Length: 202
Image (cartoon, rainbow, N blue to C red; front, top):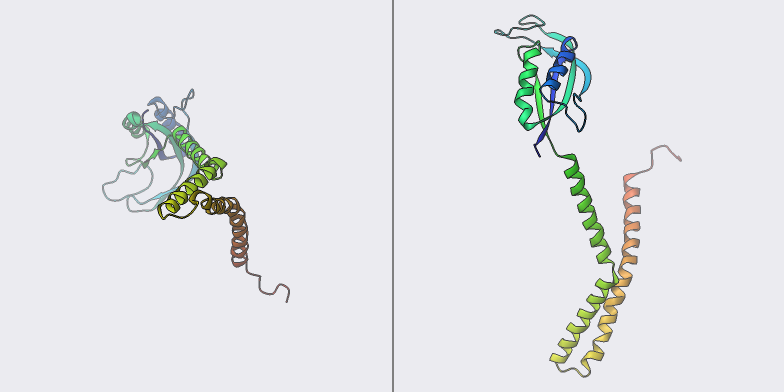
């Protein structure tokens, strides 16, 4: 897919339609099944022509204000040069202001965000799943049992049950304490962020 840009040009109101038409004819503003798509907003352009300038409006050395339109269009990379040439061919200024901004592809960005959110949700589901907890308890039991066997403790596999059950209880109760801690922390942060207003209640 060709990289897209947002092309922005400012032009006096009197020539705005001519510039829009020229850009559309050069291929700018093509979005899906629509052509000639653009957005315009009005503002005041200000400038001072210097020596050597050939101002279509204004006088060299004097400040000038012109009611202009800011015209925005989407344009593909391979059309940038032809669109800029089309603008210059009809724009009244000898130095038209043309800005070009690269655009991230919208659908790619949405897909990336959706994939990231799906991974986050899967990770959250895995963290709280009984499968994960069961595996952790099993691995804890095996590790403790092997350790107790290695140091010749009597009935190592029976004795390994207690720490394994303790670990299981911790995984089941920690979410509760986490929620309590978050609520307490949030209450403290809110009270610090919103001090009482002076004079109220006095």
